[in-house]
Image 1 (cartoon, each protein chain N blue to C red):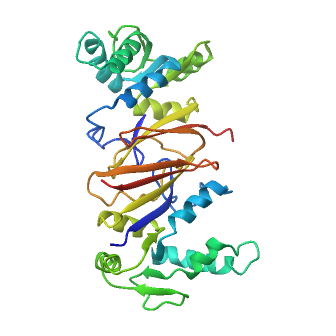
Image 2 (image 1 turned 180 degrees about the vertical axis):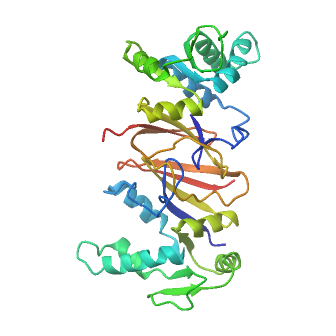
Length: 182
Length: 187
């Protein structure tokens, strides 16, 4: 999850102009490494639409660096679960739509054997899942920027346990937290 | 020119205090690693600036700490002995030791302090005071102690800015207690 130093996932209008324009190799590598711990990607409608309009096309192009290409291959082949009550169908390869009983469906998904489940962006879905304590870990990519106001990641108090950190050459501090057992 | 350093505890969601000033989300039981970091940060500091609201808690707290056997350590003594400037619209004179009250325009006063010779200046807030310093672009060096807790709502320090503030990450230090110190400079 990309967040600003003041805790926002996006500007009030959903804008992401504070994201870095140039991705560094270490960012792409870490992104692939983190995705490698999972086998399923969970997305809300907006984030799904943005990603589905990008990754399937780029994986066929030659303009990507090797690490970006590796990531594109992963993300296209992974199982993607899209939670939306408005979408009618999803076209991205290996995608599946959940439009009702989202809480139960996600709980069931977590019970299944396999690797972890990762969510990108999707602030409404994150808010919904955190309300029902369905999120176990936060991987925060803390950008070296504040935006003053925007769409917050956290909406309620949440005790966390610091797991580890990783500093990227771009100045992004990646902080990993698990939910505190208390 | 002297640097103005800001050292503040902050929640993972960007608040320096709860809506009513709550501080219960902060991690205490600091180990030697974080104590050494703070000591190092204060090595060149010879002035503490703060808002009146924080001063009313801060100054008596440290004054009392040095009166007790367990609280009378090097750091407490430093907090008591370092000259302090408290900014206030309501106070006219200081009733605290080693403290003067500044009633003039915050930006001008801080600029004057920075231009005067000496060591570095540090501030610990509070939220309103820090916000005003950040808005005016007066902070040279940020030390944000990110605590392992989200509080959902509270007092921010970057909200008074109208837009984006880009920072440059100098270093990040994770500590045993679960706090990560993020050191940023103005970009």
